[in-house]
Length: 180
Ligand SMILES: [Zn+2]
View 1 (cartoon, helix red, strand yellow):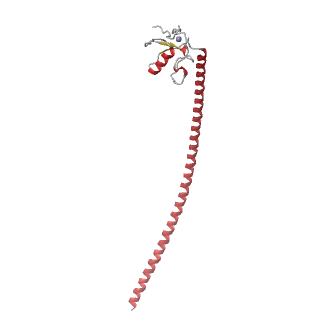
View 2 (tube, protein in one colour):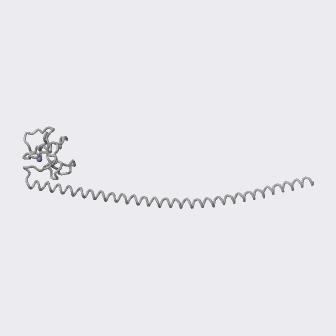
View 3 (cartoon, helix red, strand yellow):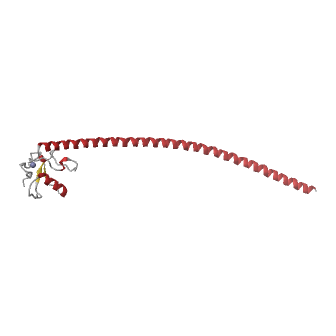
């Protein structure tokens, strides 16, 4: 079956050699109604093999972005020059907004990357400060161990002295008992 354009006064037919695109009417009800309304054909009930050519879209191709002016065809034989110019302006506006979005996106990405870098730096700082803390804790621990050793040996000496004193006293008492 030959694909021919269903738009009023359009005689375009599909050809492999031509770069002109042909589209079926959308299945989505809401969008389909918008297309049919835009085509202004009276008492018309398009079937599944109804095609429209790219000529009726400002950019020459349909767009599936609802914000794009070519979401719905807008260029027909009955479209006034003013409306055609308006459509072209809308397309330019859309493309500019896309450009701004893209730039914003790139900027947002750049900020994200910066944030990650700052975080990494902070983490590095955290790690080095933790290392410092560990070092100082190790030193403290070492000095405490030395103190404990010193106290232990002091205690041993004191205990030895006490035991010696007690034993001596015992002997003295025993001697005293024997002597009496
Ligand atoms: Zn056409």
